[in-house]
Amino acid sequence: MKRLDDDLAKLARRYARFASVEARDSSPSYERLARQVAQSNELLEFIAALPPERQQPNLFLAALRATGELPHGNGALEEIIRLNGERVRQVMLTHATQTNEPSRCAVLLPALATLPQPLALLEVGASAGLCLLPDRYAYDYDGIRISPSGEGNAPAPVFPCTVNRHTPVPQRNIDVAWRAGLDLNPLDVHAAADMSWLRTLVWPEHHDRASRLNAAIEVARSDPPRVVKGDLRGDLPALAATAPKEATLVVYHTAVLGYLREQADRSNFAAMVRGLGAVWISNEAPFVFPELAKNAAAAPSPDMFLQAVDGVPVAWSGPHGQSLHWFG
Image (tube, rainbow, N blue to C red):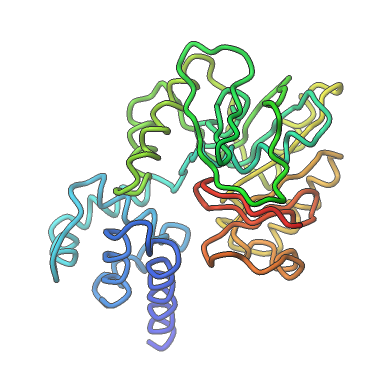
């Protein structure tokens, strides 16, 4: 019984932190619902009955939206779970938080632009591959506009990103010679159900994000990037070996390694990337590589991701690509 109580208390803290750190000032509805979960044994027990990798706040809240409207009022969330809990559970068991946020390309581009061109891009946890197309998007860094490289068949979304004075904002977009992604469950940009799930993962109040996501999907549909089914813990070297030798190989990931529960798996992945001789760009929550976070300046806000190049912290980035705070 004590172990169960401890598990529920840990889950409650997780949802309370999501409400106060991630959703606060960003999604009032998600903040409200996450706090309700944190304060309800009934809801905590429902979520705790799922496998640990299926207990994330983002997944639970997206599953609610996928099976109906978000509830309002005290007790409404518990009532929905009593009446509709099995449908919510099935969505959580069969889907993952594959938030393919193309706006994160805005915080990756400055680092990518400093590398010898052309680039061979290899993203792990690529989902539908939308973050494999940084050269096909446009950017606005506090009024400095970067256009796509070449002309596409669909209008390019413009990703705004607030930067500080140290950020090496590029003069032009990057040159990509090759691109590929790796994911446990690749999503198909031409599959209506897959794209509906991606849209559901965008938080309810984030209408601009949803609009830019739709535009990025259309860009990807005109020439879909290659995303291979595989596990980043063992299948990366084989895919990396297919990259052209004359291009700079860049292995990158954003909000992916946090889903590896064991720190040893994250460390082994880092060692694997270093063994490839690739440039490694990590854009993750600070807890993913705590030894890197120790060497970084204080974050402007608690929800920021830590970006590192080849294991050296270079910037704090907004979790949805909305800001980049480069270290001086």
